[in-house]
Amino acid sequence: MRIGELAERAGTTTRTLRYYESRGLLPARRADNGYRAYDEDDLRLVQQIRTLQDFGFELEETRPFVECLRAGHPAGDACPASLAVYRRKLDELDSLIEQLRAVRAQVGAELARAELEAGAALPGGPEPRCELGG
Image (spheres, rainbow, N blue to C red):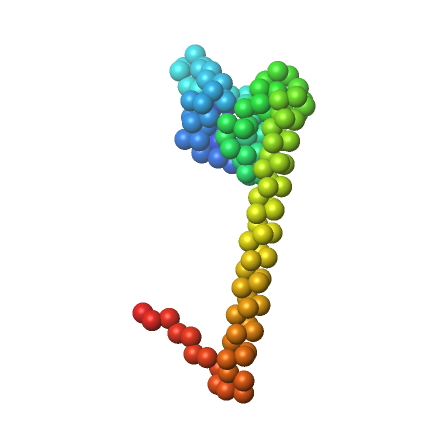
């Protein structure tokens, strides 16, 4: 198939496919007429890359998965290098989750403090008017 068909079937752009090719993630094969030529295996590579990027993987982190598919494995995550990338990504996500939990706790504490101050400042009085100047 040609680059336009691959892009359409993979749900991406020809520009993105050329970029993958320039990064060595997509093979650069040419037909006799000079056009780029792709097959179903290439479609699987692009789908693997896009799925991983949807999960938040950086493009370079997809390389072990692509290499695993190129080596003939039915799934890009069947190789030790791919499993190592999964483990690193899980560690990264766990760290981000902990950071977000800490920020959430801080925001919750600030909200509780602000609500107490707002209630204590005006017992029975009018609601404070907080307007943004523009």
